[in-house]
Amino acid sequence: MSPVELLIAGTTVAVGACLQGAVGFGLGLLAVPILVLVDPALVPVPLIVASLALNLGASYRNRGGIDAGVRWALLGSVPGTVLGAYAIATLPQRPLAITFGVLVLAGVAVSASGLQVAPTTGGLLAAGAPARRCCWCRPSRRSP
Image (tube, rainbow, N blue to C red):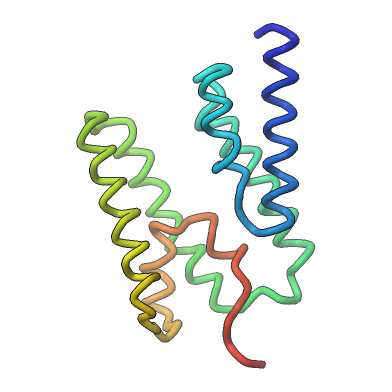
């Protein structure tokens, strides 16, 4: 990579990390499209590592406000991560893209429906599989 490409990639990740640190998401949303244009090898592994470091730091900084039930969602994220990596490595690109799009639309539909689900252990385990990193960045909506 040229020095200009390194500067673009580094600046993109830094701005995305600042955005994620401020609002809880944004690193991947901002960085992935730009990094793919700079060098497709920068996505997904280097970005996942950067995101992991950012989320671990944010989790440590906000450890007093993390709901104890999150550990079940994190435990559920382990098989979700393994299955996701396997799917990416083995499934053809088009069916994978369609499946991902359908899952995103299903998530949007559930969010828009206003459905309220109690945070049970089983529910947190099940939600952790697809949610992976997002679960510990969202503030709890339960009353103290």
